[in-house]
Image (cartoon, rainbow, N blue to C red; front, side, top):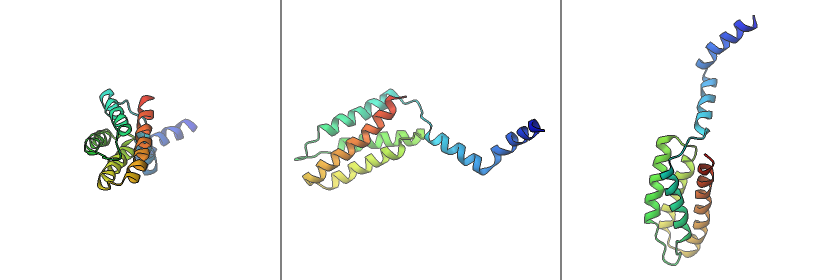
Length: 124
């Protein structure tokens, strides 16, 4: 009797919406192997953040690279998608406000975001 019930559950649960949403959640956050070239881009962004001069900040290159990484993560449905989109938006905001204090605090936040990506991707 238990075997029959078990077989019925196996056949019926995959069509259950709760089960399906659970599977989608697991797939969303399950680590995916990363592309070493994209890891290099993330490392390049990290180094560029360190080299930003807040007296004369220049964010155009970082905006392009962060947009590239954001799109890459989105297409792959990588768990870091939201973080990389946030990083790109953060660089856009930094570019729009040229104040030194904003740049200084913004560098710290950007560095934290990219360090999360580097840490996560380096463990794959």
